Image (cartoon, rainbow, N blue to C red; front, top):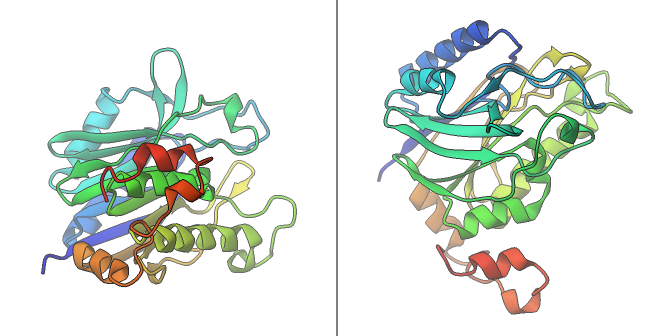
Length: 285
Protein backbone atom coordinates (compact mmCIF):
# COMPACT_ATOMS: atom_id res chain seq x y z
CA UNK A 1 0.00 0.00 0.00
CA UNK A 2 1.39 3.39 -1.04
CA UNK A 3 -0.24 6.32 0.67
CA UNK A 4 -0.13 9.99 -0.22
CA UNK A 5 -0.44 12.72 2.35
CA UNK A 6 -2.15 15.70 0.75
CA UNK A 7 -3.33 19.10 1.94
CA UNK A 8 -5.62 21.91 0.77
CA UNK A 9 -5.23 25.42 2.15
CA UNK A 10 -7.64 28.17 3.13
CA UNK A 11 -5.70 31.41 3.64
CA UNK A 12 -5.79 35.14 2.80
CA UNK A 13 -3.53 36.71 0.19
CA UNK A 14 -3.18 40.26 -1.12
CA UNK A 15 -1.17 42.46 -3.49
CA UNK A 16 2.05 42.30 -1.44
CA UNK A 17 4.00 39.55 -3.21
CA UNK A 18 6.72 39.42 -0.57
CA UNK A 19 4.12 38.91 2.13
CA UNK A 20 2.36 36.31 -0.03
CA UNK A 21 5.61 34.39 -0.48
CA UNK A 22 6.31 34.59 3.26
CA UNK A 23 2.90 33.02 3.91
CA UNK A 24 3.48 30.39 1.24
CA UNK A 25 6.88 29.54 2.72
CA UNK A 26 5.25 29.07 6.12
CA UNK A 27 2.51 26.86 4.64
CA UNK A 28 5.01 24.76 2.66
CA UNK A 29 7.20 24.28 5.73
CA UNK A 30 4.18 23.32 7.84
CA UNK A 31 2.99 20.87 5.19
CA UNK A 32 6.46 19.38 4.77
CA UNK A 33 6.74 18.87 8.54
CA UNK A 34 3.50 16.88 8.34
CA UNK A 35 4.79 14.72 5.49
CA UNK A 36 2.57 16.26 2.80
CA UNK A 37 3.46 15.35 -0.79
CA UNK A 38 0.74 17.37 -2.57
CA UNK A 39 -0.24 20.87 -1.48
CA UNK A 40 -3.02 22.98 -2.99
CA UNK A 41 -2.87 26.75 -2.43
CA UNK A 42 -5.71 29.13 -3.32
CA UNK A 43 -6.54 30.87 -6.56
CA UNK A 44 -4.59 34.14 -6.96
CA UNK A 45 -2.34 33.41 -3.98
CA UNK A 46 0.46 35.23 -5.83
CA UNK A 47 -0.76 38.80 -5.70
CA UNK A 48 -4.35 38.42 -4.48
CA UNK A 49 -7.65 38.20 -6.35
CA UNK A 50 -9.79 40.99 -7.83
CA UNK A 51 -11.17 43.48 -5.31
CA UNK A 52 -14.63 43.07 -6.82
CA UNK A 53 -16.43 41.34 -9.69
CA UNK A 54 -18.16 44.41 -11.08
CA UNK A 55 -15.72 44.88 -13.94
CA UNK A 56 -12.62 47.02 -14.22
CA UNK A 57 -11.17 46.13 -10.81
CA UNK A 58 -7.41 46.44 -10.53
CA UNK A 59 -5.90 42.99 -10.86
CA UNK A 60 -2.89 41.27 -9.34
CA UNK A 61 0.60 41.74 -10.77
CA UNK A 62 1.06 39.89 -14.09
CA UNK A 63 3.63 37.08 -13.87
CA UNK A 64 5.13 34.88 -16.56
CA UNK A 65 5.04 31.11 -16.13
CA UNK A 66 8.77 31.10 -16.92
CA UNK A 67 9.46 34.15 -14.76
CA UNK A 68 11.31 34.58 -11.45
CA UNK A 69 8.23 34.35 -9.22
CA UNK A 70 7.21 30.91 -10.48
CA UNK A 71 10.86 29.87 -10.22
CA UNK A 72 10.80 31.06 -6.61
CA UNK A 73 7.69 28.95 -6.01
CA UNK A 74 9.39 25.93 -7.60
CA UNK A 75 12.34 26.25 -5.26
CA UNK A 76 10.04 26.49 -2.25
CA UNK A 77 8.17 23.36 -3.39
CA UNK A 78 11.31 21.22 -3.53
CA UNK A 79 10.27 17.56 -3.37
CA UNK A 80 6.61 18.51 -2.87
CA UNK A 81 4.05 19.00 -5.64
CA UNK A 82 2.41 22.42 -5.20
CA UNK A 83 -0.53 23.96 -7.07
CA UNK A 84 -0.92 27.74 -6.81
CA UNK A 85 -2.88 30.51 -8.49
CA UNK A 86 -1.48 33.58 -10.23
CA UNK A 87 -2.17 36.19 -12.92
CA UNK A 88 -0.43 34.86 -16.02
CA UNK A 89 1.10 37.27 -18.51
CA UNK A 90 1.17 35.42 -21.84
CA UNK A 91 2.57 38.38 -23.75
CA UNK A 92 -0.67 39.54 -25.33
CA UNK A 93 -3.32 38.54 -22.76
CA UNK A 94 -3.67 38.08 -19.01
CA UNK A 95 -5.11 34.84 -17.67
CA UNK A 96 -6.29 33.68 -14.27
CA UNK A 97 -4.07 30.60 -14.04
CA UNK A 98 -3.09 27.68 -11.83
CA UNK A 99 0.48 26.45 -12.01
CA UNK A 100 1.67 23.09 -10.70
CA UNK A 101 5.33 23.01 -9.68
CA UNK A 102 7.85 20.58 -8.22
CA UNK A 103 11.57 20.86 -7.65
CA UNK A 104 12.06 19.47 -11.15
CA UNK A 105 10.13 22.33 -12.77
CA UNK A 106 6.67 23.36 -13.95
CA UNK A 107 4.50 20.24 -14.36
CA UNK A 108 1.29 21.85 -15.56
CA UNK A 109 -0.43 25.19 -16.13
CA UNK A 110 -4.20 25.73 -16.43
CA UNK A 111 -5.93 28.90 -17.57
CA UNK A 112 -9.38 29.41 -16.04
CA UNK A 113 -12.00 28.64 -18.66
CA UNK A 114 -15.27 29.75 -17.03
CA UNK A 115 -15.52 33.36 -15.89
CA UNK A 116 -18.15 34.54 -13.39
CA UNK A 117 -19.84 37.93 -13.47
CA UNK A 118 -17.38 40.50 -14.90
CA UNK A 119 -14.13 38.59 -14.47
CA UNK A 120 -13.74 38.66 -18.25
CA UNK A 121 -13.02 42.39 -17.98
CA UNK A 122 -9.71 41.48 -16.32
CA UNK A 123 -8.73 38.14 -17.85
CA UNK A 124 -8.86 36.19 -21.08
CA UNK A 125 -10.52 32.76 -20.98
CA UNK A 126 -8.67 29.47 -21.16
CA UNK A 127 -9.73 26.99 -23.83
CA UNK A 128 -9.16 23.48 -22.50
CA UNK A 129 -8.76 20.97 -19.67
CA UNK A 130 -5.96 18.42 -19.66
CA UNK A 131 -4.51 16.10 -17.02
CA UNK A 132 -0.77 15.70 -16.51
CA UNK A 133 1.62 13.34 -14.74
CA UNK A 134 3.39 14.27 -11.50
CA UNK A 135 5.51 12.42 -8.92
CA UNK A 136 2.35 11.92 -6.82
CA UNK A 137 0.08 10.70 -9.61
CA UNK A 138 -1.86 12.06 -12.57
CA UNK A 139 -3.51 15.39 -11.72
CA UNK A 140 -6.12 17.63 -13.24
CA UNK A 141 -6.42 21.27 -12.18
CA UNK A 142 -9.20 23.81 -12.45
CA UNK A 143 -10.05 27.18 -10.98
CA UNK A 144 -13.09 28.21 -8.95
CA UNK A 145 -16.11 28.64 -11.27
CA UNK A 146 -14.73 25.88 -13.51
CA UNK A 147 -16.07 23.36 -11.01
CA UNK A 148 -19.65 24.52 -11.51
CA UNK A 149 -19.54 22.79 -14.91
CA UNK A 150 -19.53 18.98 -14.73
CA UNK A 151 -17.87 18.77 -18.15
CA UNK A 152 -14.69 20.31 -16.70
CA UNK A 153 -13.99 17.60 -14.15
CA UNK A 154 -15.31 14.89 -16.49
CA UNK A 155 -12.84 15.94 -19.19
CA UNK A 156 -10.00 15.65 -16.66
CA UNK A 157 -11.21 12.29 -15.35
CA UNK A 158 -11.47 10.90 -18.88
CA UNK A 159 -7.93 12.11 -19.47
CA UNK A 160 -6.82 9.91 -16.61
CA UNK A 161 -6.77 12.34 -13.67
CA UNK A 162 -6.68 10.42 -10.39
CA UNK A 163 -6.75 13.60 -8.33
CA UNK A 164 -8.65 16.78 -9.13
CA UNK A 165 -7.26 19.99 -7.64
CA UNK A 166 -9.59 22.98 -7.70
CA UNK A 167 -8.20 26.26 -6.38
CA UNK A 168 -10.61 29.11 -5.67
CA UNK A 169 -11.28 32.64 -4.53
CA UNK A 170 -14.92 31.75 -3.84
CA UNK A 171 -16.85 34.42 -1.93
CA UNK A 172 -20.02 34.33 0.09
CA UNK A 173 -23.30 35.52 -1.41
CA UNK A 174 -23.35 39.14 -2.53
CA UNK A 175 -27.12 39.60 -2.76
CA UNK A 176 -28.29 37.80 0.36
CA UNK A 177 -25.29 37.31 2.67
CA UNK A 178 -25.69 35.23 5.79
CA UNK A 179 -24.54 36.68 9.10
CA UNK A 180 -23.01 33.27 9.83
CA UNK A 181 -20.73 32.43 6.90
CA UNK A 182 -21.15 28.72 7.63
CA UNK A 183 -24.83 29.12 6.67
CA UNK A 184 -24.18 31.13 3.51
CA UNK A 185 -25.84 29.75 0.38
CA UNK A 186 -22.72 30.26 -1.76
CA UNK A 187 -20.71 28.30 0.83
CA UNK A 188 -23.22 25.46 0.51
CA UNK A 189 -22.85 25.52 -3.26
CA UNK A 190 -19.06 25.50 -2.95
CA UNK A 191 -19.25 22.34 -0.83
CA UNK A 192 -21.85 20.67 -3.04
CA UNK A 193 -19.76 21.17 -6.17
CA UNK A 194 -16.70 19.70 -4.43
CA UNK A 195 -18.54 16.58 -3.34
CA UNK A 196 -20.42 16.12 -6.62
CA UNK A 197 -17.33 16.46 -8.83
CA UNK A 198 -15.47 13.88 -6.74
CA UNK A 199 -18.39 11.43 -6.63
CA UNK A 200 -19.56 11.59 -10.24
CA UNK A 201 -16.01 11.02 -11.51
CA UNK A 202 -14.88 8.78 -8.63
CA UNK A 203 -11.64 10.70 -8.14
CA UNK A 204 -9.88 12.21 -5.14
CA UNK A 205 -10.62 15.93 -4.88
CA UNK A 206 -8.63 18.74 -3.27
CA UNK A 207 -10.32 22.12 -2.89
CA UNK A 208 -8.31 25.18 -1.77
CA UNK A 209 -9.82 28.63 -1.26
CA UNK A 210 -9.06 32.14 -0.14
CA UNK A 211 -10.18 33.09 3.37
CA UNK A 212 -10.91 36.39 5.06
CA UNK A 213 -11.84 39.45 3.01
CA UNK A 214 -10.37 41.35 0.08
CA UNK A 215 -11.97 44.46 -1.38
CA UNK A 216 -15.73 43.87 -1.34
CA UNK A 217 -15.40 40.07 -1.22
CA UNK A 218 -15.74 37.83 1.83
CA UNK A 219 -14.38 34.37 1.08
CA UNK A 220 -15.92 31.16 2.41
CA UNK A 221 -12.60 29.32 3.05
CA UNK A 222 -13.83 25.69 3.40
CA UNK A 223 -10.67 24.02 2.03
CA UNK A 224 -11.16 20.27 1.96
CA UNK A 225 -10.14 16.84 0.74
CA UNK A 226 -12.92 14.63 -0.67
CA UNK A 227 -12.70 10.91 -1.40
CA UNK A 228 -13.97 9.24 -4.62
CA UNK A 229 -17.27 8.46 -2.88
CA UNK A 230 -17.96 12.13 -2.26
CA UNK A 231 -17.18 11.98 1.46
CA UNK A 232 -15.30 14.89 3.02
CA UNK A 233 -12.19 13.51 4.73
CA UNK A 234 -10.82 16.79 6.06
CA UNK A 235 -12.20 20.34 6.07
CA UNK A 236 -11.12 23.72 7.44
CA UNK A 237 -14.66 25.04 7.80
CA UNK A 238 -15.03 28.78 7.17
CA UNK A 239 -11.73 29.61 8.87
CA UNK A 240 -8.16 29.86 7.68
CA UNK A 241 -6.37 26.53 7.95
CA UNK A 242 -5.03 23.44 6.22
CA UNK A 243 -7.09 20.32 5.53
CA UNK A 244 -4.73 17.32 5.62
CA UNK A 245 -5.51 13.71 4.69
CA UNK A 246 -3.49 10.57 4.03
CA UNK A 247 -4.91 8.18 1.46
CA UNK A 248 -3.90 5.31 -0.80
CA UNK A 249 -5.20 6.98 -3.95
CA UNK A 250 -5.12 3.97 -6.27
CA UNK A 251 -6.82 1.74 -3.72
CA UNK A 252 -9.46 4.41 -3.07
CA UNK A 253 -10.19 4.69 -6.80
CA UNK A 254 -10.32 0.94 -7.29
CA UNK A 255 -12.67 0.50 -4.33
CA UNK A 256 -15.01 3.27 -5.48
CA UNK A 257 -15.15 1.98 -9.06
CA UNK A 258 -15.34 -1.76 -8.33
CA UNK A 259 -19.11 -2.23 -8.52
CA UNK A 260 -20.36 0.90 -10.24
CA UNK A 261 -17.75 2.57 -12.41
CA UNK A 262 -19.14 5.94 -13.44
CA UNK A 263 -16.54 6.41 -16.17
CA UNK A 264 -16.57 2.77 -17.30
CA UNK A 265 -20.37 2.57 -17.48
CA UNK A 266 -20.91 5.71 -19.54
CA UNK A 267 -22.90 5.41 -22.80
CA UNK A 268 -21.46 8.18 -24.99
CA UNK A 269 -23.69 7.20 -27.91
CA UNK A 270 -26.71 8.21 -25.80
CA UNK A 271 -25.51 11.80 -25.38
CA UNK A 272 -23.75 12.72 -28.63
CA UNK A 273 -24.32 16.43 -28.05
CA UNK A 274 -21.60 16.41 -25.39
CA UNK A 275 -18.57 16.73 -27.64
CA UNK A 276 -16.21 16.25 -24.70
CA UNK A 277 -17.48 12.68 -24.35
CA UNK A 278 -16.40 11.88 -27.89
CA UNK A 279 -13.06 13.63 -27.62
CA UNK A 280 -11.93 11.89 -24.46
CA UNK A 281 -13.86 8.64 -24.52
CA UNK A 282 -11.60 5.72 -23.74
CA UNK A 283 -8.36 7.67 -23.91
CA UNK A 284 -7.19 7.06 -20.36
CA UNK A 285 -9.75 5.18 -18.29
